[in-house]
Image (cartoon, rainbow, N blue to C red; front, side, top):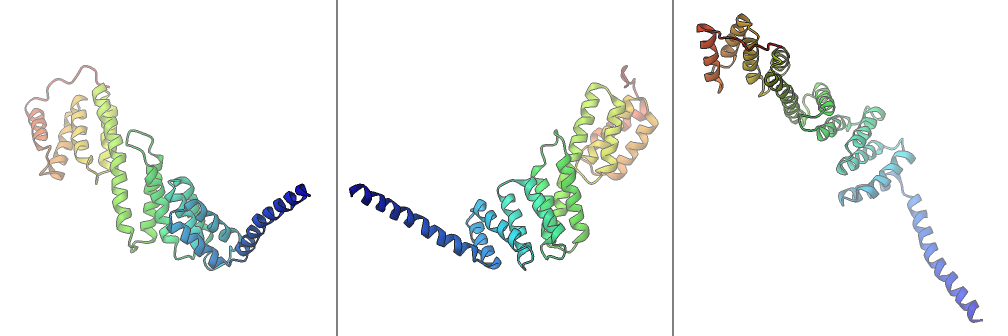
Length: 261
């Protein structure tokens, strides 16, 4: 009899646990797309991104034709972004752009795609594939949405990223100068001058190009590039170095190094 009472008590306890959860599950299943989205949004605002993603995923999968499906997709991407899952976030933003081309959120999604890759850009000495991708996506954003409130920020980020690319080239050119591979140095300095003329490295790169040409005994070319330097940067902080080079080229080019690679 005692064992029987224990068994009944255990069954009652288990039912007490199971039944409320069933009721909660049924209630959850009955939520509309809007209610489900609001639930996810509340979790998102509380920075409970993992649970919020679950709610947005349900809206995305169960209510793909609802009026807030694009909102759910955008917030799903934002959850990824806030968890620093930048590649996954970029994919989710791209999915919004692809599946909801008429959505008012497409412009913001395009900006955020660029921002995802921007967050992944490494220091200048490393591979710059994410930097290039960020520039492409920011440029696409500016091209399609030039009047958007984030267009100026995108332009500033492009400038910052171009500066990083220019630094990588400049550091390489300087290394070639140290190694006395002057022809290679000329090529790298020239790439900066032509492709990144609006960065902080364009000015020293042009003067570096002059120096590399001098070391290669290409004095006429060096004089022409030096004239360009004075014309383009009349108030340069490197003016003294440039004047010294001009004097050397005018009076006595001097012997070039023996090893002119």
